[in-house]
Image (cartoon, rainbow, N blue to C red; front, side, top):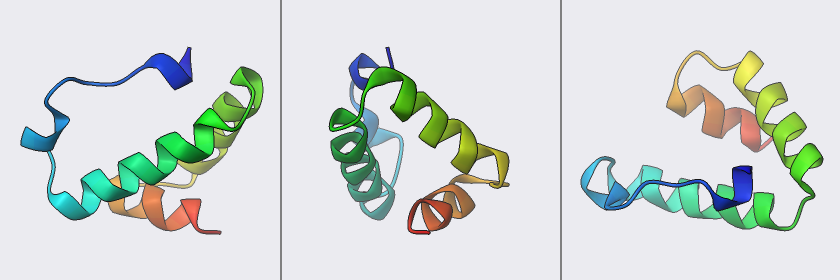
Length: 60
């Protein structure tokens, strides 16, 4: 289940800017159904080469 997944202590793994983007992503996904959230993620991941590309694709 996408909305229930996460990593403890993720603030130790990524910079503050990326962490902020991750929180926004979680808020967006929490408002979607499970299938819609998965499709959204898959669509964005297909066009992304790295995390920065992924978060940029999220805005489009």
